[in-house]
Image (cartoon, rainbow, N blue to C red):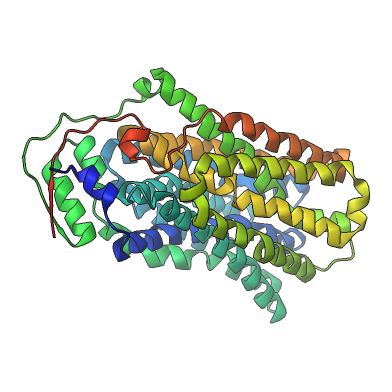
Length: 459
């Protein structure tokens, strides 16, 4: 006799897994596009609206603040009332935020629209990651959750391409930035219906709701195969309690590892990525906006995209923890070299190689694994809660990095700023050692959950 969990863990990789990956991944395409396009849009908005530095900083970082709210709130709701309760709702919020941003008549409207957008982005993190994790088999789980996250790469590429296209057409700048922001609604609108059609997670239904019959039905609907129970006996319900979460020593240690690593990664990554035009300007103030966008795109294509691909290919072989440790280490070394050798910035080719290597091992490293591991290490009744807190705290790091990076560069200079980012990257090694390695383990084993449900797989 097999449990629903056993059935899911040992299922062959199929088109149903890739369908769930696509539906979840389109949210991350939207997340990446919306979060990073604002850096380009601000370059057009600031002179048109005569924004000061404080307004520019707020506009670039407000979505990251509200992403904390979205991640924590949606993460808790999904653990209390089910993943399906909120799956698709966060995509509606993202679409609304993007559309309202495009029609902004003034700074306040745009700021509030970006705040709303961030709530949807934050809410998408825990639900999409956990939906994919809970439907995955244990052999390919890392690959499938990484594929969801890797859609971020397409969003990072799409933003500069669209910006270059609009600027190349010599479209009015006011209309251009509105198009850039409004286009972010399209992928979110595309998947709302599909997300609402995905059945509730069988693991949540079985372990939290205590209904093995419905769990088997959900597994059958997802796979298109019959999953019939041998016994109709259902376990007790295991509704999550937030106080119990914070009283559990093992969960807190796991949270320190997942949230701490994500905070440190996002501080370095978002500050660096959204401020890439500032970095390029420090190298050469004569660069045009189009040149800066093109260089940013080339860095993503040459270094970041291979990093995502390596993560997908190797995460179930090398393991998440090893990849994260290697990534933080090489990020730290790369940023340290940029910091302690000021002559590198005068050799643009060498600078881009070292800067690009930091991107390669960010993607083939903690940018992917900090998303994957929280979807595996927490028990089912706290899985989206744990992921939501991890993602939300990560976005606090992203907010601080985005806000402080240009200020620090202006205050202490280009090289010392990279030394700070190097130290932050090395600190990620310390938070990573707190985590277990989930590679090849069932979600129940890695989160120390025992299941007693029994089902029979009939195909």
